[in-house]
Image (cartoon, rainbow, N blue to C red):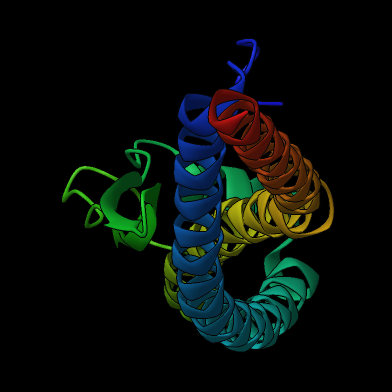
Length: 206
């Protein structure tokens, strides 16, 4: 009940229980403050995730429409030719920490320019598709970062809520019960000691 250590009898035990209870109550208060901040941050991150998801889906739909037009005009060989010699995009993720939780803060994408040696797209629709996919990739990275951040902070919300519940519903009540028993035992011991003292005083007077 006191961290696995046996509570000593008398005033020393009561002091230890009182200290443990104070520590547990302060800890619960601090965790509840942390939980309020984390919940607010989680709500913000979820909103950012939803906005990024909508932007990504919209841009992806636009890119797919342009791609379909380009393929209808020139066929799949034109897509393969337009993609030849193009370097892959690079994603950079910036990290931050919120109430002890490390999570992505932002993501940026570097889309390489088409090199002069690469063949130009066969039609205007494929040119628009290339630009639209570049925008979609950027928003996809932003969405992935926002989703990861929301999940990480959300997991900490759940963990902190469980810790607060364990303290408020189990650990603190047990300490209070133990402290009440210690107070009662100490009061009874003091009462019995007083009775013995009175009996001793009366015996000495006879």
